[in-house]
Length: 302
Image 1: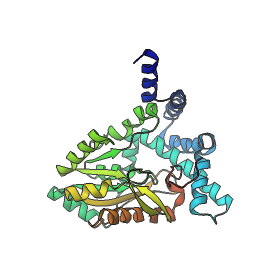
Image 2: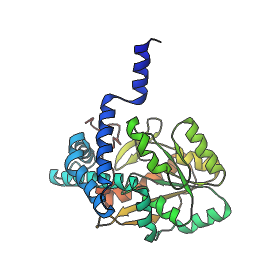
Image 3: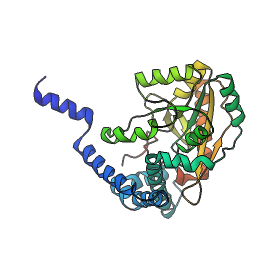
């Protein structure tokens, strides 16, 4: 392979110049915002994503396109308002996760509720593995923090960010605390499976487009959905427990619910049940779900 070809291969593996520039800008923003006190830092990042970055990089436009697909009768004003609130929540979530030590401390006062708490405690006592499932709703790391504070060690399996430069530092917000966290891929999935086999607890997010998944109705439209949680649960006799957080009106606090386990059955029915649990939250508080994702295969490309 000649020098030019090697250079192109390395560039492709590491990302484009646009990725590099975007990461530089984001690193600078995060570094500046992190100098603020936590109570100012979080709303500031929310406003920045709402007013500047969200519109600039197309997040607001993509959220509006998704909302139009799912809610064709919604007024333009309402769609725009939700899309802006989505960007705000995304910004808050991003900086909260970079502030994981302070974020975890603030969540120590949160008492989780829900029908799944007893089942989780019983699984922990008996050494049975638990797979917590959730979506990109509110701050999806809040439930893991709350249950970690309650004495559980919860690992995870995460999908690598498309921008490799950003992924290099964002991955640390998930792997620097709690249980072992693995990157999706052959070795990561094997590691996560071993963790479960040993009776471990882990969390999976299942609400991004999965080309190797199955079509599951979500918000009235078929969406390609990963079946990993159901497959692993059946393989290791693990409980599948949906858990979610809801951001309170102050923008800084959360309520955390640990729901009743999903009954074991067919992979499709289990995945559908997980999706329906998430859908109930999205329909109630749509501004807290990440409409910026390309969730539906048939959605317009923006």
